[in-house]
Amino acid sequence: MAALRVLIHEWCHLCHDLLTDLAPVARELELSVEVVDLAGEPELEARWGEFVPVVMAGDKALCHYHLDADAVRAHFRNFR
Image 1 (cartoon, rainbow, N blue to C red):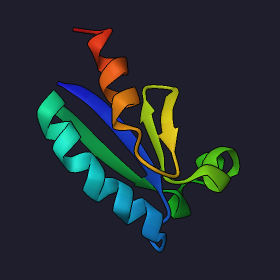
Image 2: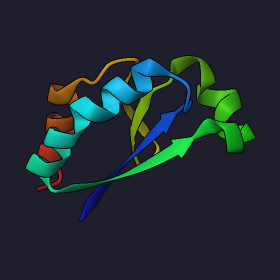
Image 3: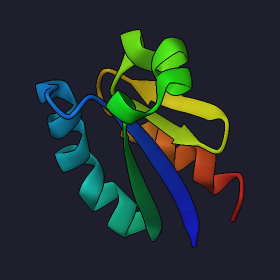
């Protein structure tokens, strides 16, 4: 199963909104979603903290702040 990692701040309302919006897209594309709270990840916080939420596929950021469902779909179309 293909996977996404979503970098968040637990207290961030944009992060929770993005996770809600991402759920149907993840089901559609059969993606697993790992949620990483940057509070416990100082290296990720230093790199991505200003951009959260960030949707990652491996090392590639597909979108940040708001879900770009078309970018997620386009990325995974290239791998199927």
